[in-house]
Length: 471
Image (cartoon, rainbow, N blue to C red):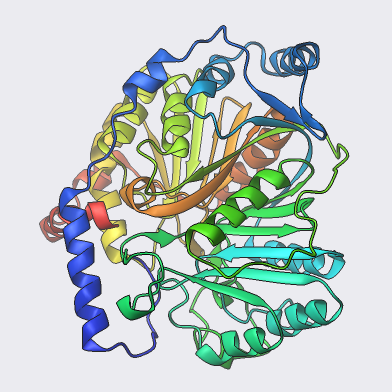
C-alpha cells in the first residue's frame, strides 16, 4: 500500500494485525482470467443505454449508436466495448453528458471548490486521501462547514490508510459541524464495523454535487497538489520537493447518478450511519452535452473487475494507437502480453511513466519490464518535471478512460476503484492533445542505453517483483 511518510503513531496490535492480514491475502491473491468474457461478447447485441430520463427506447438507442459509429468510423475498439454489455451489466452507457478535462491538480482543486460552492442540496465526497487543502482563498474544512450551515448536506468517506497522516482534529472539526463522516476499513481491528480487511482499500476519488455534477480521476484531496497551503498543519506536513502531476474529469449530466449510486453503496456496505433523508440524491436531470460515458466501479468482492475487462478488451481491439499515462506501472501478465502484441501488430503504443515516485518498489517493477516492451516496439517516456500520478488511457482517438485505477495488481485485486470511460472524439482529442504536450516535456527511453544499465539496478528490479502483487 502506497502512502507518503508522516503517519500517526500506531500500536503494536494494529501494526501486527495489518501485516498479518496483508500477507495472508497476498498469498492467495490471483489475477482473474477475463479471456472468456472478452472473447464471448456479442458484437451484434444492442447495448443498454441510459439518458437523462431513464433507459432509451430501441429507436433512441439506434440514433445514439449511429452517431457514435459515424464519429468513430466503425472502430473495432468501440464495437467490442459495446459488446461487453452483458459482462458490465451494472454499468450502462449514459448519454447527455458534458465532459471537461481538468489537466492538472491545481485545475482540479479549483473545480472542486467551485462545484462545492455552487451546490444547493448536497455534496458527497469519497477519497483515498483527505487533507485540509485550499484553493488559495479558503480551506476545505472552512468551505464544507460553511456549506453545511447553509443547509447543504455534506457526506464524506475517507480511507483509513490513505488518510492516516491527516490529524484527527481535522475530522473532529467536521464532525462537530454536522458533516457525516465514514472511515473506510479502519486499521485498528477494534474499530472495524464490517469485518477486518486491512489490505482492501478505498482508492476512489469521487465528488458529486446535487446528484448532477461530478469530478472523478486521480486527484486526491491532498496538499501534494498545492504550492502554498493556508493551513499546512492540517495536512501531511511539509510540501514535497516537486508538485504532483495528475488529471481529472468534470462531468455535468446524467452520468453523475452512477457515481452517486457507487458512493451510497459504499456507505451502506461499510455500515455508515443513516444519512439525512432531506437531500434529493437522484434528481431529474436534463441533458447537458453529447458525450457518452460509462462509469465503472470495481471492488475486491467482484470476481471480475469491470475496469480490467474493459481495459484489456480496448487494448486488444486497438487499431492505430494506445497512449497510456500510468502513475504506478506494475502490469499484470495479461496487460504486458496485450501491450506487446499490440505493438508487434503495428499499433502505436506509448507509455508515459514516472521518472520519480513515492513508491521506489513500483518504479523498480516498472523498470524491469522496459526491455521487453522496447524490444516489441513500445515507446516509453519518463516524466521527470514532477511526480506523475495520472491514470488515463486513450485508444484510437475514440475510447478514453480517466479514473483512480492504476496499471497494477492492487487496483485489480484489492482496491475499490472508479473510472469513467468516455466514447467519442471530443474528449479523446482533448486527452491526446494533453498527452502530446506531456510527451514533449518527457525523456524518451532509448533501448540500447537501457539494456546497458547497471547490474545492481537489475537485481533491485528482480527483488521488487517479489512484492508486485501488493504494489
